[in-house]
Length: 176
Image 1: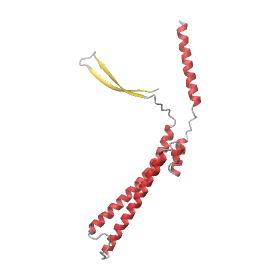
Image 2: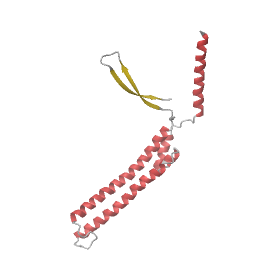
Image 3: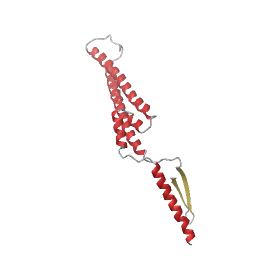
Image 4: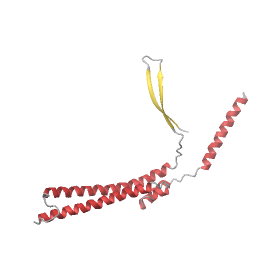
């Protein structure tokens, strides 16, 4: 009777020792790392991603901000062109680059370019804020050990004891 109990104790001690070894090998978690990563990204976009060692995200951040700034500048130029042409029309000149275009259409084009300019600015600002949020969340997620040993599969169950037969489907997640 004692012999059956002893291996269980050894197994528990071995498992506990294994857990302690796993904890010793890990880096200690820095609770200020998410705030530090967010601050770095706020100061210089992409710096928080570099702090988290997610270097592939830096071109995405700069590409998104650059696209917003590019379209902001382009729509500002269009807005100014349409506004200046409309002002010249009101002053009585007809020799602008938009000959054959009505005054109403120039006003509409000016409004559309102004709206697109505002959306472009909001897009650049949104990418900047998402950069900060991404750095913060990614620093939080560095704490978790995500292995490739996660499985997700269906589990089909039948209950024959009841009439009518009950069918059930569940989703079973197995974590290491």
